[in-house]
Image (tube, rainbow, N blue to C red):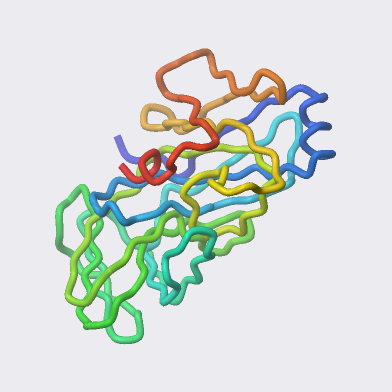
Length: 232
């Protein structure tokens, strides 16, 4: 079965929860999961929005882009894309001087390969098109000179409501930092769309997430290490 052109998650909330989230200044954050063996890879915020309603729809295209950047990977640091291009499994992005790249056929059919033909270190990863039509990083990994990395996007998203401010593309390791911060945090929900391209979940400001306790979703504590949750 071919992959769907778009995925969608509907978050259904009671009016009192919508009012509480809006009055409290909460953002809805969306992060994507990736299959990658590089333990130094880090997830990034893909979407941050205050557009919250009783049925809040999150959708994204199946298509992914490979990007390069000169931005260092550091917690709370937004990654700025320098070059990106569409590609799919079984293809390789050969990174050239200046961070530009050429897509070549070759590599494991279930993976996307990044190959650095230079002696310069870059930050690389996947990006997906956001609501404003701009490609936003979904994870960041170092690509050293002469190195080759493999990764593949997973049909899983992490949803979270928080008053902590993160710009799209920001590297984060947890929704709740390990230092004192004046912000409110809620548990996250990891939603798997492997067997269905649409899901519906519920959120209540007091009781949290519910989805019928099906196997395709699980709650994630706000203090969890998102590097291990989203980089698999």
